[in-house]
Image (cartoon, rainbow, N blue to C red; front, side, top):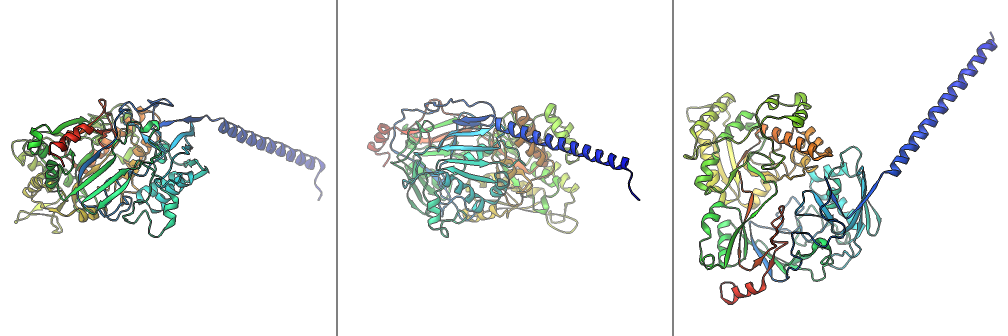
Length: 637
């Protein structure tokens, strides 16, 4: 049966209408794509001499030098200071062995940080950088005069090689995080290098991260690839482009670095007034007592003190009384390290937060500080202590909104209760009985009952055992009273001090119950938080000693990395601080908020030292006349 003409005509008209509609849709899509390409092409490209994560750079293009340097600082002499422990490698990037002091510092980077601005960076090997407002990529224009210590040029190929080498042979926690966020690095020319950033991740701090990548010589590594690996220890440090290079060493005793007389970057603005010593010598000692004796005898001439007992009592010797040695404290404007007694959260006895809370109560900061530390320290309450990022009181405003957005992942008590801070104890006795009683009730509630022998066991008969690990003799008098308090509570607690090499290996493998460690945070935290508190790297990251992570942490890190304003950053960091404190992952101990430094009277320093660096190895210099007078008088060799 034939189809009526009217039906055929209707179908033809309908097909034509569909074709016209399809043509309109295709044209619209083409126009839309064209408009998007136009917008992309018109996106503003920023060209700058530096980079700041928030706000404007303090120093304009072409600035003469940083404000905190002495541009006329004399050059010469030797900086010497002490180090504790051992070393067996000049490759600090391997998990094996122990790297020597300063073994990273002959490698330079594209950018260098400013010491008087938070999260601001200026061109070092890079003369300038270009990036779109979206920060989807960055191009660094490198200084053609930059050369390695062997005279070979530092090129874009070296930068790309260094980036890929860190991904292939660097720390897993670093490589895994960076590989996803920076899919490609490309040399656009001999001195022009481009990094591409993944659209799936926030871009904040990516420019400063790639700008801080150490630059290795591709030719040096490829000359002997089997023996020159980044993941293996070696005594050959390789070649860098920095102002100092290795001069000599005596394993576990001494390392000496000398100024490169042909250093390419002496006169660029970011280096004016810096790198003032002809050489830098580090003397190694088995412990702090031996190191102190070395300083007193003049075996080395500058000592940054970190022991309160030494600071209060050990500087009573003839050279000090004669004015040949000077003591001083210097302002530290950075976030104090979030250090303390950390729990290995992988250990089954620490799975219950009640156990961790009980063990926090066993530490008596007030007694420790007054009786053992001469009252010189302050109690730490926050992972961002003393800054605008510290959580305080009950959450409110934007911080409250951020916490509420976590939904069921968050303990609801966090929304309405005061932030958890370090508990108070009586300074009159080692074990505060009130806190010990509270702690014992928590252990009872957690199912760890006291047996007839005074030891706590669970329902399966397992002992509540804790080994406290350390490699520092100076910590003995701090840790042992804490361990004694745990024993009073029925915990089978022991303190085990081991040598440096064993301690390093067990820390890396997270083979410990408790130890002194911590988290180094900054005023502008960003992607590094994934290595410290993120879920993916929690099982192996060297930057996360407790192994903490969780669904109430990961979104906050995402928010922090994505923050586009200071206000948004601060609100999310305060929320993260509050969540971390609620988990009781460590026992906060103390902080100082300043540097203690003693030095033989031969050093000088700028009047306006910066807030974010002490700079004794960078900004200070030797007064040759005073140094000579010390030698002439016979007090120094």
